[in-house]
Image 1 (cartoon, rainbow, N blue to C red):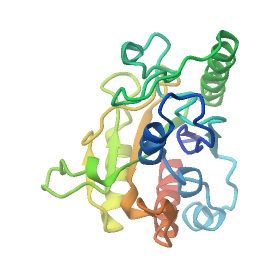
Image 2: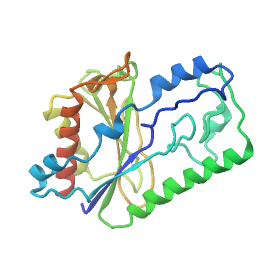
Image 3: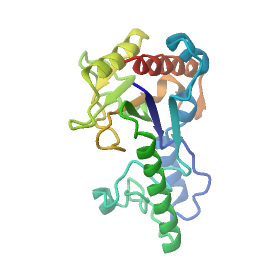
Length: 244
C-alpha cells in the first residue's frame, strides 16, 4: 500500500451543552459515546514505523481529524441518513434516549453541513492514489463489547468492513486480526460492530473499534499508560499494511 488515511471523527469533546433542553442528560451520553483519546492512540508514531518499515517517514500515514464533537456534527452519518428520523442524523437534535432536544438556527445548520462536506471531500482526495486504504478509527464502551468474538471472548478490538467494493483484501483483514491477537487482544470480526466508512467507492476501508477498557478509564475519562502499547500495536499494523 502506498498510503493509509486515518479517519478520526469522534475524538473531539463538546464543552457546551447549553443549547440542549436537558444538559445533564446529553452530557452523560456525550461522556459515554465520545471516542476519547483516539486522536492520540491512533496517531502515527515515528519510531515504531521506522522499526517496521525501515524508515522514519510518517507522511504515508495521514490522520484526518474532526473539528467538532460528534454531538455537534457526526461525520459518520450520511446526508439524508435514516437516523434523522430519531434526531440522530448528521446534526443531533435529540439524545439517544429522547430526554433532551435542541433546535439550531438554520445558518448554524448550514455551517455544520458544509464542514461535513469538507471533511468527506478531504478524505476522498487523500484516497486518490490507487494503492490507498482508509482506516476508520473508533472506540466503544466496554459494556457494548460483551457480545463476544468467535471464541466467545469479550472483544478488545473490533474489525469492521463492508461487503462491497470497499472490502479490504483477505490478506489485510488477516494481518489486522493477527497483529492484535499476537499482542494479546481478543478480536471480533464485524462484531459487536460492522461496516466501515465509505470515503471513496473504489478504495478499501477498514474500521478499527477499540474497547475503551484497553487504553483508558471510562469512569474518570483519563487515558491509561496501556495506551502506549495500543499505539505501538496500531503503528506496527500501519507499517505491515504499507508493506503489502
